[in-house]
Image (cartoon, rainbow, N blue to C red; front, side, top):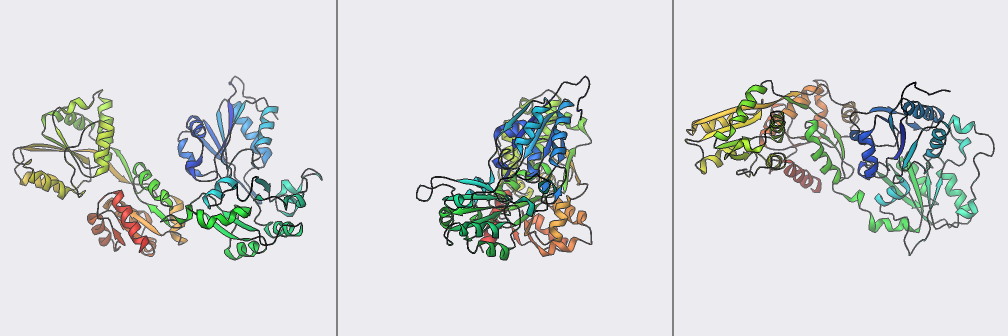
Length: 525
């Protein structure tokens, strides 16, 4: 089969280990390659969040599960060759490590035969990572000085994989169970269906029946599930727990250390699923912090931020900013859009002259510092317009002063009204960006709500609450009554109540940190 593309320079294929699931466990080299990729060919076990590192790449899913193959291995090989010979830089993103039961060796041989250059970037394999996240060290000097990895698909004719069934006799060798039974620590990949047979073989060939063992499903993912026992009872325990693939089984004395070392599953929000309803740009910070606390996070951007319709007015306001006493930003998004306008006009922070800066919220203050390299002079303890108005009044910074407000098109008029009532000399109120409802909710949000998988929904503004209800529609609004609802502050809470949704918790500090603290207090209670 010819894959040649006339007149096109040949590309290159990078076989990149995606790691076991936690998107933070991919290598730095792997991230670099994803950022440069023209095409990403990814597997079932590669976390889709990693695709965010390749926003402009063409993405092709070739996932394989038992009896459910998107493409055969030969077709995947052909696809890699075809994409490379079309001149593309191709990242073949493979779960775990490409060479540990990942069939990376087969792909490399096919690329070699086709004359396609390739590079292999190792990844953390699940036997090590899933065990570590379950609190099981695969080596410990008091328990074992060796560690063995074995595929649980050794007798592939027992499975429904057509490729495996078609193999010629002798291509897959039998295991030496007598030798395996003497090993101090063994990891069996892809062995959920074969677990009764594996354990029976170990006992039959001399391993003591009370040898500790553990099966770990979705290791390093927020939905990780661990079942422990001994080789005599683990198959029954796994069946009783309803544990399904993908899973890995660790056999050895080191499993007993889980009780003392377990850390991942002991985090405060482990096992809970959150829907985060911020803009796509803002969701990452809250999502990352929730995941660090052990939560599964589903992002549901309900708001999209867009450039304002009045760029000329914004540019004129920015050019005159140095004439004002105070410049107020009400959100981090406002800071970002002002920075973009400064770049477009080939200006920098010097345009603000001696004006002082006020911010509503620590995240806004941080954005001013980081994006504009400017010090914030006033940031009230409560992150609402009322508090900032009171701060201005108590500092005698209203009467006779000139204020400029740079905000969203939907910002409340309260601060402007308070300043005018206080005798301000001038208030220049400029919408530097606009917000709009998102086009639709991700399918995963709807399916998780309907399946009853969601524990919490976070609301970080009145807009997120209104938009989520609108996007769900009247027929699905009732799903929000079945989950816990976390509000970032009293204004958002008031909107939720208007929508018929009583907040479960409300942040006492009106920012992401306060929201997380309120959620954790509720979780502890």
